[in-house]
Length: 287
Ligand code: SF4
Ligand code: SF4
Image 1: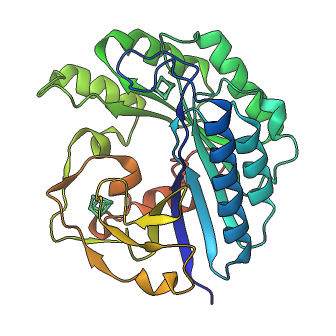
Image 2: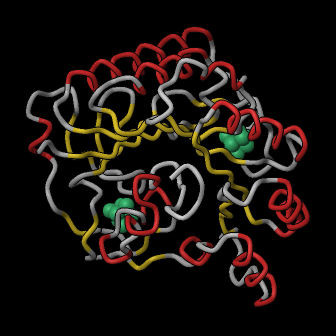
């Protein structure tokens, strides 16, 4: 049986059409030349995926918003049809036209969508979610759990069908940010909130990042994950597969879903199954 890899791709793109106040990419633009270079990198990555014998799952984790650009829409579609791709997903603010996904293979395509309360409205956002459901595109919906967003979070849960998983990213920039009552409210909406709320001690723990999962940039430089800067190899070198081996985490704690899902002892593959990349648990819709 061929190996199964999960890859986080982050090319040089660094711009966004939205203006969230806590984000360094808010209302930033890339030049045409930068976008052309980003497209070239993405195209090279797609060709590399097509050339591999491994079964590959991909999550695009751009700095900013990729899906407003045609080259991301096209790459998603192209990768979704490759026989060795078991999933291709993207983190997105869902501001792009849903029709651009019309030719994607439904079995493999997925979206990690995030609702940004200051940038759109619940009716506008949930209309997009309805269009995704109508088109049969797997997706999770998420929101950052800031206190000023609590009313929006409750309203979003009411507006979405129960089959749609609504994840909440805990606000971690302030210590002891939530009261016990607030924690219970957030848990009642996201049954997996506790996984995200507390940092996971990870130093010396077995982690699949660097064994069956890795992150890669536009130049092909691969790292175990987004949180450990040390390079493990370059995917465009013929001997790259040899870089993948069992490893233990080398930093104190892991705080993000895209990282801690790889910690062996958390066994989150039994919670998310094949929805691990786009963050859809097994007992929610689209499974
Ligand atoms: S949508 Fe995402 S990338 Fe864009 S400004 Fe908001 S948080 Fe940043
Ligand atoms: S536990 Fe997190 S930080 Fe450590 S190697 Fe795994 S993904 Fe990276």
